[in-house]
Length: 120
Image (tube, rainbow, N blue to C red; front, side, top):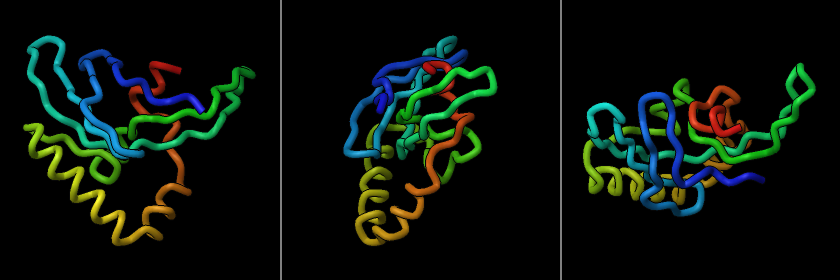
């Protein structure tokens, strides 16, 4: 499986991993034009191998949550301490309800996720 890069960018933002524990990570999100930095807490998803109509196969890989699942698998914070507190809360919630976390994992990642599509 291909790991999620620790640094990547899209059209507007540059992302750098600050910390990661298992499938839970915090990334800085720096706006390229203004330099404003936010922090994103994300639950890293796994995308299964996929063969496109063109015949090209994308291997199984870790993926940043898609914008369509933001709020459920990702959240933007204004400060690093806020992001760390949210990550700690998510870890506690997942530890308290492991069956719910496993059910989420079985849903898999979204093919339209933002960062991985550019890396693919």
